[in-house]
Length: 246
Ligand SMILES: Nc1ncnc2c1ncn2[C@@H]1O[C@H](COP(=O)(O)OP(=O)(O)O)[C@@H](O)[C@H]1O
Ligand SMILES: [Mg+2]
Image (cartoon, rainbow, N blue to C red; front, side, top):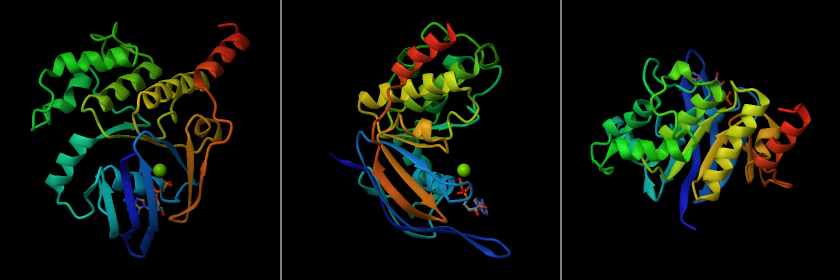
């Protein structure tokens, strides 16, 4: 399997009044097709690591190969290009534009696709909305969609560049349990289709839907293991419906 992420001894220090050593030597490998949960207490360095993995920020030290290309020292422009080409982001707060339709929200990243890798943005955006089950909501504006649907639009937007990697920072953070399961079933489905996912969560029940758990503490990886008894979100959803009678 090709390697999507390979970091060696990544360090990140924020130079404040007192330097903050947010990452103190993180070596992580993620192969194509993996589904990884990144866990750890608040302040352990998860978002800092995700920002570097997503080429939103650079490490102070160490190397990062993304899809076999060294990216740790790229300038802002090159970082942006790599980001557009290789990474899809899903955030806790959905980050959709208001007064904008689902279709427009998903098309948006393609405006920045300077290489024009995607020939027909509208067709591609529709395809991605179909893929997340919102093919019948193309013209709905953000505020006309439920929280779960908004997060699905965000996932469709993350898919539109055919990324090598999807990074999701607490994507279920603003969702109730049922909607969280529903979103996790979408991530499981996409992962089954071969998409590589790295997701931050502090909820063990959410991590159980992934295939591997990496835990951080004080800027270091302290645990890295396969998920035992991986759960199937579709099954859990079916049982959940049964229990509540929805
Ligand atoms: N932009 C920043 N400037 C200064 N310090 C930061 C910044 N971002 C994070 N930190 C600090 O780095 C450490 C790790 O934070 P973070 O990566 O956000 O952890 P987590 O996502 O696990 O809660 C914390 O001590 C935090 O206060
Ligand atoms: Mg965080």
